[in-house]
Amino acid sequence: MENSRYDVVVIGAYTKDTIVSKAGTRHVDGGGFNYGAHVAVMMGLRTAAVTRLAQCDAHVVDALTSIGVHPYPTYTPYSTDMRLYYPSDNVDDRVLSVTHTAGSFTPDQVAGLESRAFLINTSARGEVDLQVIQALRQKKALLVADAQGFVRVINEQGILTFDAWDDKVNILPYFDILKTDAVEAKTMTGEDDIRKAALQIAAWGPREIVLTHRDGMLVLAEGQIYEAPFTPEPLVGRSGRGDTCIAAYACKRLTASAQEATIWAAAVTSVKMEAEGPIKKTVRDIEKKIAEKYAF
Image (cartoon, rainbow, N blue to C red; front, side, top):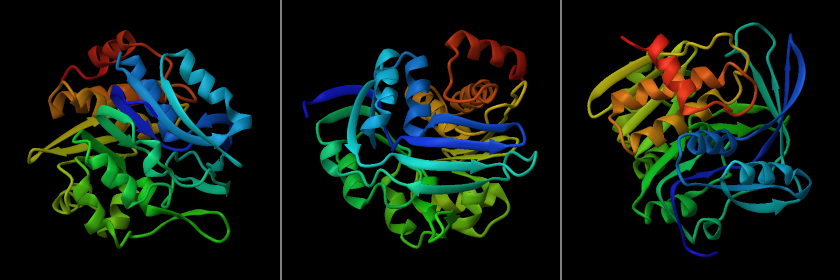
């Protein structure tokens, strides 16, 4: 792999998502890397996406190329097939199941890449191991990760469940920024209070914590807590909320304060949730949302 320099490199398997809710059944091209890459390109950043997927789903690679992303795919026997079932009107009440996975990333998949930031956005434990994390840490870039790829495990029935992640005290110090949601944070810490949970996770190593919940997001950075609500009108696309949020925060954090990045990420996430799939809007749309909903 040739040496390439980017603003952000997003790492994660493509997920072939089947979304089932009271509104019906939809099929969406998912994966945290996909949602994140769309955010970074929208922001005008030089973006790469390292992913794993089946050859039959190569249209995803073509789609990323068409919007300006530089994809680095590894083709595998299967893509990660995920079913997201929403049994009620509560968008945080969902059951995720997996029938196939695209396997695990290896250090050689990131060996030739250089970037200002690397974002690990995987779906379940086992996709990225300590060797890959150490390889990325040696690049001395901003290293960002989503906790879902470490606390989620696939049980014998194929259901994604949560595990306390006993190895977290050894892994978390490698990350500059960790994103988690309220459920994942409670799984790791035992805390219902999201502020206490964020403080505990930060004590294990990450410099900044981005915590999403039903109503918005909380950021712990430089000893301060910043909060901003999600304001989608209407709420249509819950899937990809956290993936979009952490990508928007990490990308903005390259040039802005934690407080500014918090508002930016909340606005980007809100605009994304107004439609299914990755964000398709522009920076102007985000600025309009900020002016209307975040002019505190």
